[in-house]
Length: 286
Image (cartoon, rainbow, N blue to C red; front, side, top):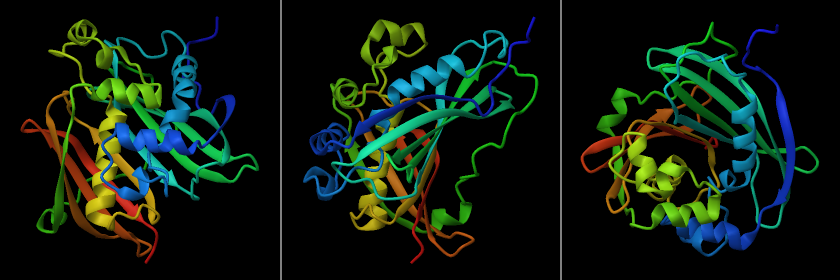
């Protein structure tokens, strides 16, 4: 009998679609984007492509690990997310995307499996890469596989260089608005009873909606409202955001990358709790 395994490097179904201009504006509105270029439809929000990859995520999550390959898990949650922006995404573009199993690693809290999603044009030119890391709480794997995503630890020195804070009011209907534009109908965001079964007092906001709000703050505070220079965005989810509360995103000057590009750090607080940690944005060299 074949031992249960995590399928490192395996690729899954290739999907095709289009960057619809109205869908991009709807995504901006559903995430309370503060940048007029997104609301007007002059640019596509940085996280918009997550609205394309939801079916690929569900498939890859199901197929990336055989039953029994992760032992003792008590559930799973989105732990970290990273995006790399390789080429501009523009309204009207025909695109394709495909998922693969990127890596797996053991942590004290459980096993983290990272899935890679590459969105490209139909000629294969890469546009946006997502590294979607989920933790299987309490889960144990036989050993680490592949290389984990690059480090994005918040640099302590950056705390002395606050650029500004942008506050977002998370509306009561925010999870439903986000579900409508993203396809992310995760039960703990749609139903209070489902959330309580997972240990939350009520519905929580989808993690990628939280990250989209963070990206809006980064572009507004750290980039003057122009998303074009963004080449990397990464963050760790540390606590849930609840509808009806406020999300405050602080953006800091994180100096320069090894190749001389500008870097920003960010974190987000809601109801006195830090909900996003180790946020990092890197800009095209300038």
